[in-house]
Length: 229
Image (cartoon, rainbow, N blue to C red):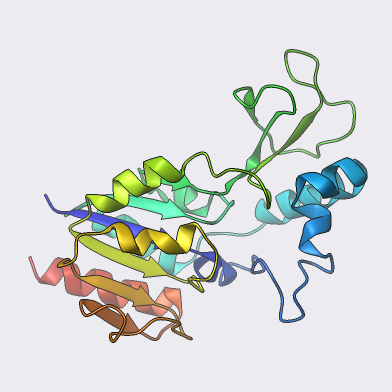
């Protein structure tokens, strides 16, 4: 069974109503990203950071997966599918995708500020005074700017073994995630689905660009891949 690796970014979740990481003005929900997505911001104003993620978490619980998420599940009937996502939502899992790796953390999880291995599922608000089993303050289980990406090596290993690579809804500007495309074998087919493509066939000879939003482009590609068997 061929292995398909799918790299997903904010574009696939945007159609479910989740705002992309940065709006056109460079802000995230009205905040400079460094205020709410960096260790410095956390040290400066924990209440602001917690309130920001509490609102994001609450919003996530109100939205539903879209046709793009659902189409990827269909691939699992015919292929060995692994999803590597930059997104912190759980929409892939909620749809039924079996193998999902989150590069940048998960919004519905929190972790100890003292022991990063103490991670808990969390759907309610997180407040000052909420502590781990070792009595240390909990923080969002999100990889902030300036922090290492702990799942990167695993993502590289998964991507390097792909027979087919599909990239959906990402600007290909956020590193190190954007560099994963360079770890695939030089002769495998690569598909890029985004209404405003930022890479082209001149850069990657085996690339096919599908300039569609995820809900349209993913289903189109999935049907083509299944019909080709």
